[in-house]
Length: 88
Image 1: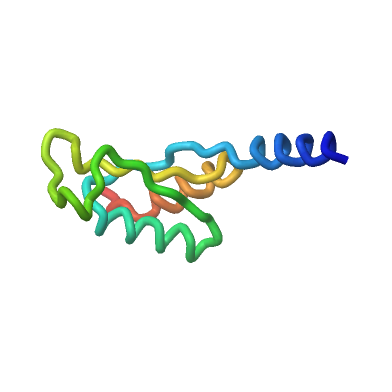
Image 2: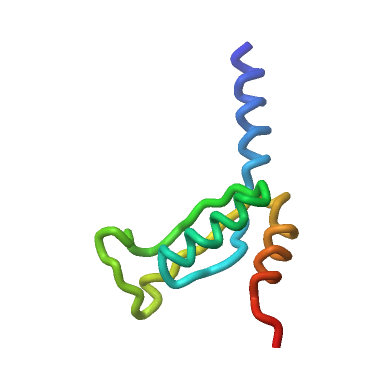
């Protein structure tokens, strides 16, 4: 029985492969992108170098926030984010 639990955990973790979909330079923009993606059923997580609530600045790359989505959501997430960019 314990063997099946370990197998289930391995399968579950392999389904949770996260891929970077976009980078932003502050928490406000990150929240906008997150809300937009989640409104389309794509869950995401953030990763940054600095805790924004402690050091609310974005110089020298310290304010960079990376947005990650599940691997299977990556193509749609990229397409959705691209649709937000103004066309030149």
